[in-house]
Length: 224
Image (cartoon, rainbow, N blue to C red; front, side, top):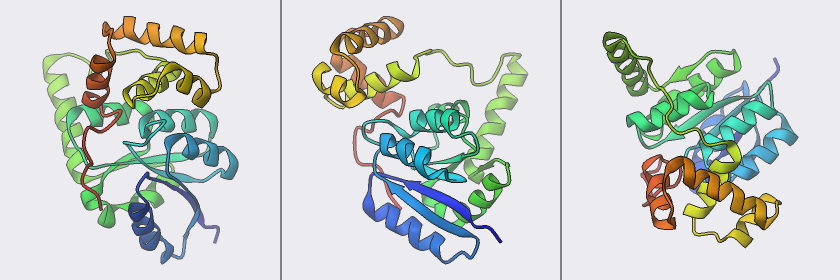
């Protein structure tokens, strides 16, 4: 039987080791690679063509949600499972909009992850029970109000989202230019566009926004 190829992406080595140990004992799953940044996860997904990518939300250089969007776009057969320590509405909304095949809470990943990988590889979605409950509640509330659920307000492009994260991480334009392999003028253009869209015109404000949207973490989050 052909094994399910899995790529693990988390910026904490101990978490990746724990996930690997959990999965390696399964006869139908094989770990093909590990990444510690969202950008590395995208590169490895393009190179290794995994069946399933398990990725943390809060990742340096490119967060897990943006990496998910780009992996789904560039690696047509890959399914992405997002891990997070948080279950608030904003995280749930962003994950469902990203095109991920599932959202797992780290607190219950040990119980759910294996089943989630198998479901994802078969083309199905899988959410931790707490997340499923929240999704149902949100859609029920939207239905009763007669409004669409999960309407997205902020329409940043993928590149603008990348620039936003790097700015929030404290990178200056020259560093962002080198990281993204684009000119400084291009970075400045994207930076101005995202500030105009968000109506935020200072680094502190952009950082607060990035934290509120789960793009970066303000503190170290709970881990497995």
